[in-house]
Image (cartoon, rainbow, N blue to C red; front, side, top):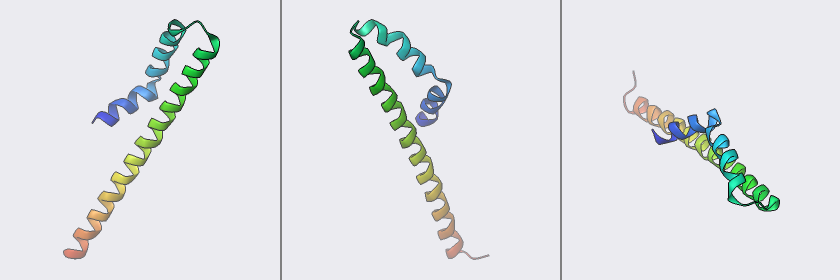
Length: 75
């Protein structure tokens, strides 16, 4: 799943390493580099929130589906 691949890249810090290599070459202006670094960190934090929400909704959906199956076919 794509989300799992992105999550593993985020957990490994691979994107942070790449950002550390790319940001110094974008612009020598310190304020601009700082702004880009902050925006990057915020985007990574947003991805974590989205992935966590996706997993939570997926678990909730499977739980509700199981409840419906058990209600229709009691043991």
